[in-house]
Length: 121
Image (cartoon, rainbow, N blue to C red; front, side):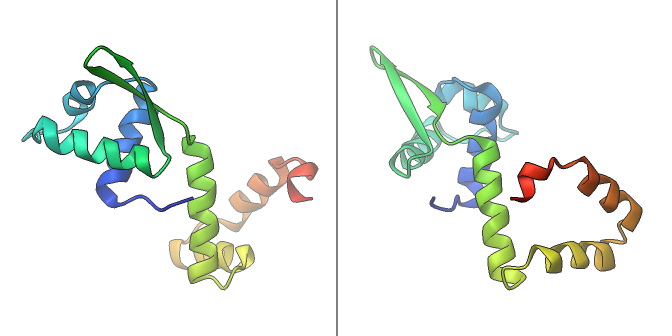
C-alpha cells in the first residue's frame, strides 16, 4: 500500500468520515480559507490513482468513496513505523511509549489482557 502525503491523509480522513462524498462535500469540511475546487479535485484524483478511493459518476458529478479502510491504512502505517523506527520490534515501540510518554505500565497490561488470544497468533 502506498503512503499518503500529509494533504492526502487529511482528505482521506474526510472521505472516511463521510463515506460517500463529492469534492464540494470535502471542501465544506475543510477549514478557512477554502482551497480551490480544482486543487481538491486533483488531490482526490491522485488518491484514486493510488488506489485509496473510487468513484461513481452521476452525469458530470463524481461521488467518491474509500476502497481502503481507515483501519487497514492505520495498521499498515503502524507496521511501517515499527519497521522504520523500532527495528521491526513491537516490544521496542511499547517500551518507548512507556518510557517517553510516561504511560502507566498497568494500563498497558490491561490493554494487552483485553486482546483476544487469536490476535497474537
